[in-house]
Image (cartoon, rainbow, N blue to C red; front, side):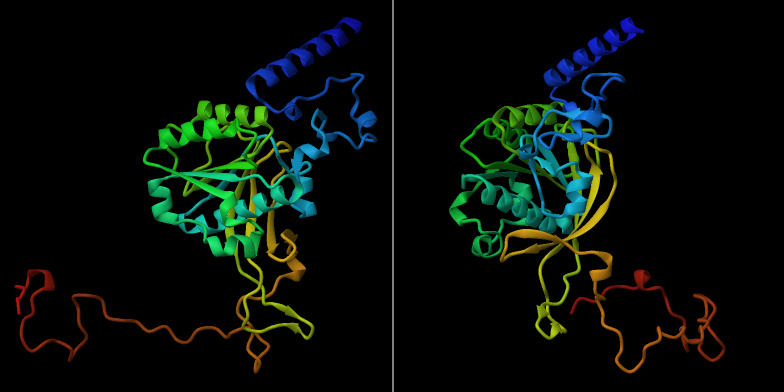
Length: 334
């Protein structure tokens, strides 16, 4: 039994060393049974984070807390600061929501640490399709000065990956944002491992924004799927203001995380406090208000009308002269 315990300790130490070399988070390793580092003993220590039966070597300061308690708990403390994190938009129309959520995270980073510049990298196709963030709204909504947000526009994806790798190792940047469209072959497991390793080495986050992309194996420990959510009416002293548009809202789904816990959350961004607030189900409001004259739901639809099938007109509807299909008729010019 003693030899078995020693063997387990040796295997666990080797797995941890391999994880450090490959850039894998140590939270994914399970503590061996009977180990001196028992989960019950570590629970009382507030400087570490417990993930299932494993032990995370990172402290609470290593995570960026969004402020939404349930989301942070599902992510085991929040988004890792020194790591590659994916933010997905399943459709092209979600590019605005993905960009807004990324800017919200940058706002949280700048509020907690030094106000260093942020580099946003993308190809010409990306910026032509989704555009650039509005400079006038950066300070009003996120507290980011326009000169703090730097852009690097390159013609090819290989150039964008090279710029991102070089920027990820720089400690003079608060964060690096790489925006990519679709699922290109160059963005493989090797490329994401390089980005993740450089983010860990510099101690800075790298956010990988994906437009209209499919979920693929990457080295990012966290993948969030973003889409826009209906905005609630503005709150006043007398109650919600009918017909108004309130704070921007996001629907956040956990696609991958260290804890492997699924979940979907609706977050509202407070542009005044520069913080997220979760909108619970009981706090949600109807997008279309109910009718003031009737409390019941809408009645069933009326009678279904049967239209004559094509090619067999009803009696009396036969044209007076033969007609030819439109695609066989000659086109008049003028």
